[in-house]
Amino acid sequence: MLKISGKSISGMVTIGPLKIFRHQEFDIVQTTVDRPETEVARFDSARNTACAKMEQFYQEAVSHVGLDNAFIFKVYQHMLTSSSFIDSIRSIIRNQSVNAEYAIGQAEQNFIQIYSAGSDTYMQAHVSDMKEVSRILLRVLRQKKVLFSTDEPCILYADDLTPSETIQMDTSKILGFVTKEGTPTSHTAILARALGVPAIVATGEDVDYAYDGKTAVIDGFSGTVYLEPTPGVLSVMKEKQDQSIRLKQLLQELKGVPSETKDGRRIEVAANVSSAADLAAVLKNDAEGIGLFRSEFIYMGRDTLPSEEEQFNIYKLAVETMTGKRVIIRTLDIGGDKDASAFHLPKEENPALGMRAIRISLKRPEIFKTQLRAILRASAFGKIAIMFPLITSVWEVWKAKEILDEVKLDLDKKGIAYDHQIQIGIMIETPAAALISDKLAKEVDFFSIGTNDLSQYTLVVDRSSRVLSDFFNPHHPAVLKLIQMTIDNGHKAGIWVGMCGELSSDLSITETFLRMGIDEISVAPYSVLPLRQQIRSIDLSK
Image (cartoon, rainbow, N blue to C red; front, side):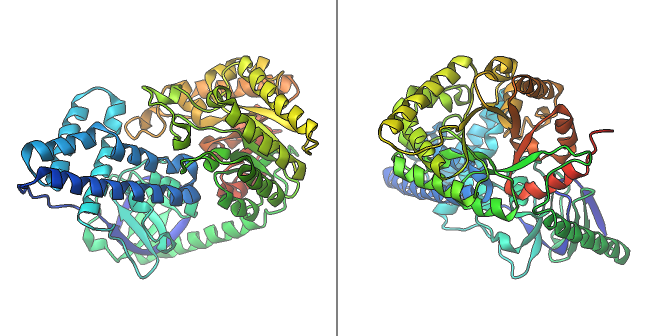
């Protein structure tokens, strides 16, 4: 028996045969080409095919793991269309009269040396992205697909899994994941949560092919993997698996039960929505509302802006689906790590600090008004609230409300129905907003704390960076202090305060947030019932 340990993604146990997956290795041979421009054309044809595949993968990933986590395919698209890496490949083909495959390998090695030699951790973090783009191009040139197939459900082992590998797998046959590398925020971990299967990452262990097809056990409670377990261990794990199955059944029994602590404090547990396809999961998991409707999915993956009518129909579908439960629609949050070609946004040195979210809405009021009209019209069919993202000043709230009032006045003149009492809220996702939350609270009906951006802006760490993962601690005292400040200032002004983001579903800190006074927590649909169970186990009177 081989026992290995790593970081657990979920508290579940699964047993099944192990399937070992290795990255495809390409034997790259240098060949001389007589017509370099013809080879460049061959390369560009493969690049165009790869770009189309990335768009396809992006659309599929949105429905599986949401907009934020699907965006990596947009990064790959950008690297395939306009990057110095691509230009370097073309130059090598032309200057050395070599085949495209060899040029890709040479360019990759050159860039790895440059990135590794530098002290810029941001650049080093993107080495893995460049390697993945190389593999994507080579697969297209060699007309190869990701090689993973199985006739029976299995536990998948890999050194690590790239986004483009996971999106091409038949996930219906995967019982769980084990990876040598990775972090709790890696693509493998995100996919495991989305599928509701256990995963152990960062084991640091190489697994020999001799274990392929052998019985494996993932103990998600302890973060342990057993390969070829002894009869005694297997018996214990089967009992533990039965317990986890019973736990799942108990979670189902929590449907319709209030999210209330033992001492009677009621918390609203809502769900985040990244696409219209998520609405079914929201209902299935008995969310008490939609705490974050990411409206930007309507704008992405297209070259034209959505019409008012198109947006209205999507918002109306959401509010009618929720049958009286509140739907909080966050206005457009494009920019930063989320691009939309219809906006023709300029390339920026630091997009995370550039033209994004409410800034685009205020700079492009005609687009903002179209969205607000659609939201207001949909509010006639159910309970909707409007939320403005990335607020850093009171002026931004004033301006956004001023534009909203103009839209309301226009609807009134035309006799178009809408909810005149619609609530207005803002995202608190920057240190600036948290620090002036006492002033902001006087302007709105509610706050929603966006823990993802708040954490990375406070800690000055890219949360998606593998290299910087050790420095990204959303439990950092500075982050928690800003959260407490926001809750306190909101309550002093008589408004309710919610929370959304990855930290919201971290059950290890739920009690801390409840003691801080949080009123609402919005999580991914699959996290609703586990969070409700956690809330019901807490006694705040002690």
